Image 1 (cartoon, rainbow, N blue to C red):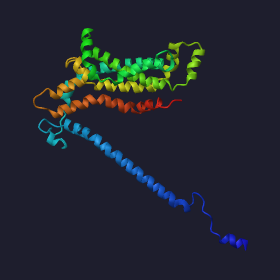
Image 2: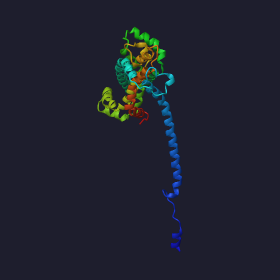
Image 3: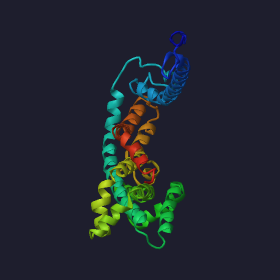
Image 4: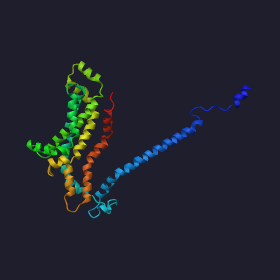
Length: 301
């Protein structure tokens, strides 16, 4: 009887067998639906972001009679590269001057911000928090609020107009944000590394050069990208402290767009693409390092 009962009893369902597949299937279906909706929303917002890029790109290949606001969405009737040649001839000198401006301003601001961040994060002295607060205060002052006294200061110091003055201004106004980024990152470095360097007889500068600086690559990537983009896209300082003969590409692009009575939209769009290409390439090449560098200083160990 016991044998017959054992044979007649249905097998018990265990985890992972078909008896529980229905619930798991429903969960998997729900997850797939949520993921599909999420990707659909991302695609929708991506299309919204790419609409201006489409208009820029399409219009840059249109001739003067074909490029108009009424035909902004239409493909070119006749594809031409004349707009690109004209824009390059007009912007090439200013693009080179902008590179001469943004590279040293980004590097100098990054080095000074690294030194400030290390001192404020690892060197305890009286008034350190006050000094850090005063440095951060520079981040919240609008450029428009100080442009007139800044212009008077530049004139009183007899600084040359053009790239040298712009480098100095971008370095000074870049120090607050670079100091903040480096200070937050250096606070995540284990204190035992600093103590080990001190036990070995390293002073403050030796500790910074031998221990801290080799670990600072993520923050340097973030700061360099940030400073490069900010200096490259700046227009306000360019208007006040340079001219079309010695100014950066943003000023030349503005002159290109407003230099003729009959607006040539194709040349303007090609020039805008030329002016934005360097920052776009920087983000494409170093974008993942930029996000990684931001996240590296977000969690304190």
